[in-house]
Length: 156
Image (cartoon, rainbow, N blue to C red):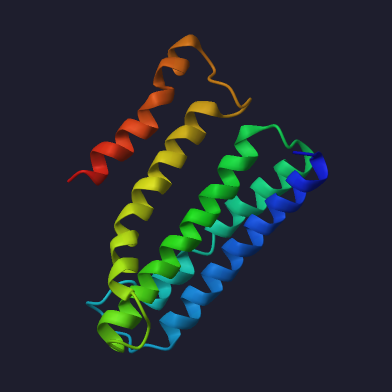
């Protein structure tokens, strides 16, 4: 992949993350707010900092396309946006307006996996930070931990 197309892809991933977070916020504002039905509007707004991860990832990818930290940050922000949107879509289609949107049950199932993916990306980011390679030989042995942690958490 050329540097130019990698930079474009990084910024497209950032744009998708922004679009998903804004769509989640719109869906959240269109439904009744109950204290016992999470996430509330404040919880969705709390997801806005995830866009900073995606923005920094796109910035790193546009400057150094081969650096894995930039790609991890882009995917981290995109996964967070997907998780927020999927959660709001499922609540909108199953609770507040049943049957208003298609396949809300499938999307509700996806929300369970989104948090496991975000945790795995965070673990991989911690192992590879700052150079894009594990800092020590012990760190290279830990590189399989994010995938195994995701498998364990999602098998419950």
